[in-house]
Image (cartoon, rainbow, N blue to C red):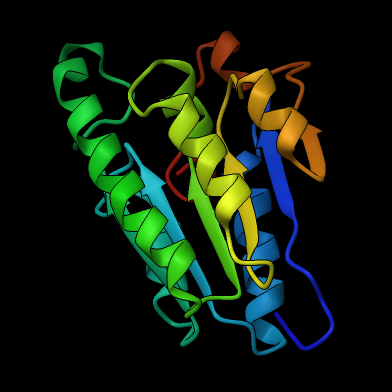
Length: 175
């Protein structure tokens, strides 16, 4: 972080749409001010999401994805733990490296809530992160222990969603 600013811990959670989008928006804003940003995506492939194409054009915003072809398929749960742990190991090294001002752990809340990564490891990372690093954790079902450690918690609430009207996820809008 810039001299004199202490990095905080932010959480974006809830059933509503926009958690990853909010974190990316924060990262893009920060990159525009010269901050170095890294987003580590848990359980999301790098080949599907439009943000990967856009973020590659921002020189100080890196993205590392750990995921299967389809994020939401339940048949691949046996691989979720391995992928989540790979993502968490990379994320931990990234946070502790001091190379980045902002580190976004996209879908880490989901991974912790469902036991794909150990909740106590996530809590330890929050507690041990360098003071200069802003840490952003996204994903549904954020465990209360993570929310208690955070400085900012935003809960996205679904009020209405086109999926319930039979409208499938649209390229460029939902992914």
